[in-house]
Amino acid sequence: MESKLVPSRCHDMLRNFIIPQLQQRGCLQDIIFMQDSAPLHIDRHVKQLLRQHFTDALVINRHFPKAWPPLSPDTSPCDFWL
Image (cartoon, rainbow, N blue to C red; front, side, top):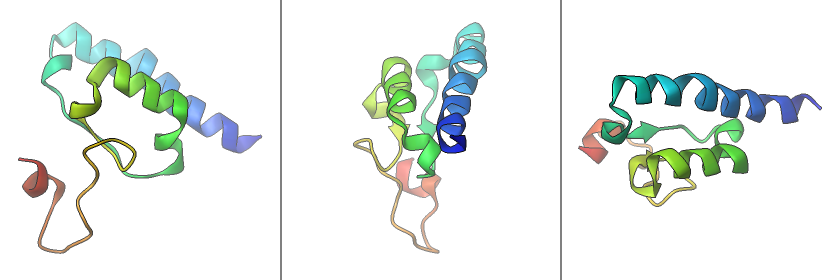
């Protein structure tokens, strides 16, 4: 039962706090959303919410077209993406 609660908390936090704050500041379209591959970040409801607000092009996650960079001490996500 606990495993079902964690993804819903992540989804609720995105839906009820993070996305409204970004919309209020008028910067939602300028954000590149990066997530690690924690199980709660790849829940289907979380992925649907991210696709709805950020599109596939603006999300870095292993289950989106832009995946996290390979594990390398020479590459950080910013080096990979920017």
